[in-house]
Length: 302
Image (cartoon, rainbow, N blue to C red; front, side, top):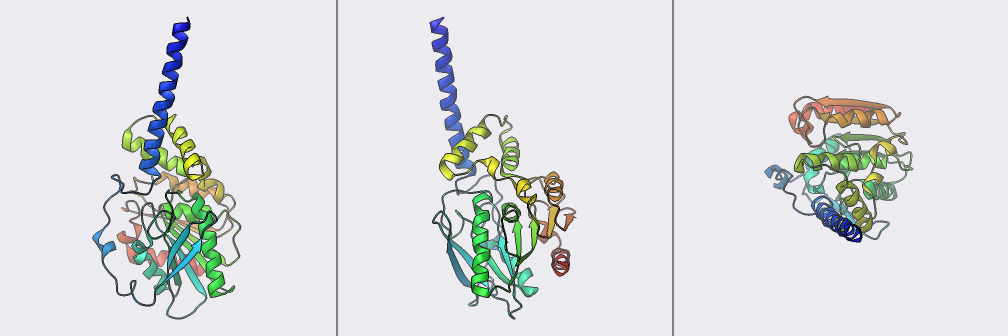
């Protein structure tokens, strides 16, 4: 009997060690900023220089986060001061430079545009991806930077794509100044855990339990948050800001089914737009004119 108990004990220890290795592997695979083999290569258009976007009028803004990371953002002033600023949030493993098309859209509507590099991305410090949870506080910080530099009469809209969309939705649940008058999210997920579980099943075709729970614990130990913390739906329940929800009906990276979840989660004034034929984060490129018209109509209303 003692021998059986000993064997069982050894098996349990080996299982724990194996889960620990597997959890650390998945943490490095999903949470550590690095080249990701499951992401599509960056489009050449995003790499090309744009005289407007890369011109002399752009500035670098900086803030120090609550956990002492130096964060960078690109600021593009409007041609005429109308006391309006759009703060943009890029996606997973993206950077501010990739948001030039959206920046131009808002700039053409008369907005100042601020585009942060999320922590761990671009020129911002950080060694992990927060999936929008720690970033929500960073965006509150950027809101305060806009008010400090542009004045307390500034009207602010938040905009995000993919992880950036989840970020601005999570930010909506924080205590925001009345200056934040609208939010536009494009293809954001319902929670970090739901999205990571979905991706894990798609990529590896293996049961997510208990590996997802182990990886969440490792993320808490190494990055300071559980996957369960990054819950968009809980944050949206506290939201009071009018919000436009956009999602492509061919999205297989953040499944379109998540649109119904995030849309239903808030009682604030809201609209949604499903873009026919659009894959993940492709709604703008499918029909730029319709996209701009839909966003502008929403912003004029709220």
